[in-house]
Length: 85
Image (cartoon, rainbow, N blue to C red; front, side, top):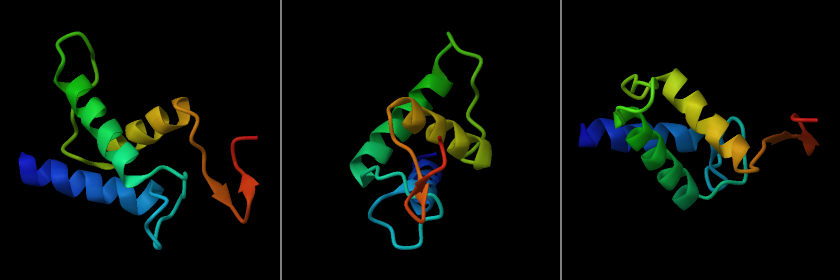
């Protein structure tokens, strides 16, 4: 599980990290922020008080992390255009 979760954090960073050159949707989130959000998400999946289930680090898990980043005020930009407006 530890290896799977480490790979998941790396996978999320390839999409949203501000420090990864090949990111698809840069959200100006640091690697440290992404790590923490992934950990919070994983803890949420483990809680008996939520219906959210860990999908093994799939795209649904990644998109849920993205939604948390959105809620925190991060957004993505393509060619300096904010896609959220």
